[in-house]
Each structure stands twice: as structure tokens, then as C-alpha cells.
Image (cartoon, rainbow, N blue to C red; front, side, top):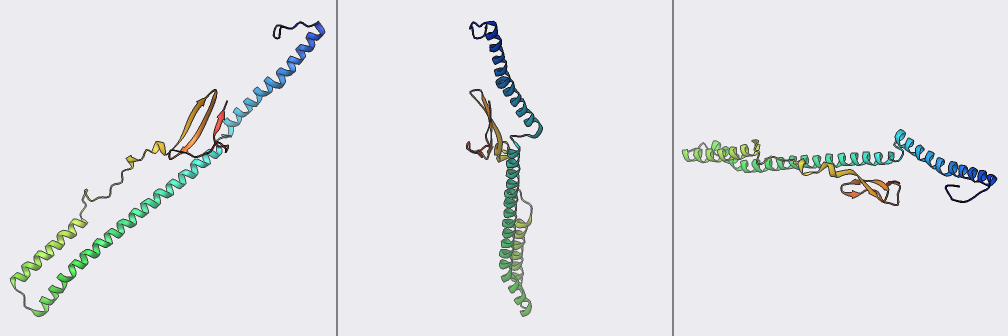
Length: 187
């Protein structure tokens, strides 16, 4: 035999060839067919990664909910800020209103009263205009460029000693543990 370099009689050689053929069929062809079957499963149904897609979808929904909550919180804070500013201005206007009513009832108005009240009203008007006018220095700025959207969630590929694997990383942390079937290894 050329392969194992042993000498056989014709009868022994035929038996040796038959054993080689059986070994070839049972080990090589069967392993090859199993490998092809695994590849077909991957092509047809994303066999190994269906639950990873589910994890990604779950992360997406969770992230959307967190962004919505953050936006709602900012809106509520803005509403509260506006309400507080309005109340502050109203409180500051109350003494002026009382003084105007008092002067009107007494009918004892002099030029200095008019000048002083005009100044107070103009000051209040200025404060109100500063609060209500659109000023880029006081605008709420949302800078989503600070978020590296490509690194929030990603698939990391590695090759180690004839072995390829990928891991799903979320927010820079490995989302799956090696003890689970969530890290996929291909030999």
C-alpha cells in the first residue's frame, strides 16, 4: 500500500482498500456533509444569529425608550423653568400694580411718580423680553455629535488559532458570556 507503506497479499490488499473506503465514507464524507449542512442552515435562516438579532432589537427598543424618557425629562424641566420665571416676574410686578392702583384711587399723581413707575415698567418689560426672546446664548443645545453611535453597539470579529468568532458588544461591554451560546465560534 502506497499510503501506509505496508505489504499485503491481494486478498489482504482488497480488504485494506475496503476498510479505507469505509473510513473515508464514515469520517471524511460524513464530516464534509455535516459542514455543508451547517453552512446551508446559516444561509437559509441565520441559524446561529437569530437570537443575536433579537438581542439587537431589544437593545434598540430599550435605547429608544431611554432617549424618549430623557427628552420628556428635559421638556418637563423646561416647562418648570418657564413657570418659575413667570411666577418670579408676576411677583416682581405685584408691588408695581398695587402702587398704580393706590395712586389711581388717591388721585394724587405727580411727575416723579410717573417717571418712577415708567422706569419700573420698562425694567420689567426688559426682563420679560430677555426671557421671551429667542437668544442663542440661552438656547438648549442638544449635541448628539458627542455620542459615538457606531460604538454603542457593534459586532466584534476575532480570529484565534484557526478559529473565527464574533461577539455582540453593547455600550462597550460584552453582552454575552462565554458560558452561554451567544459567542459564536467557527473552526
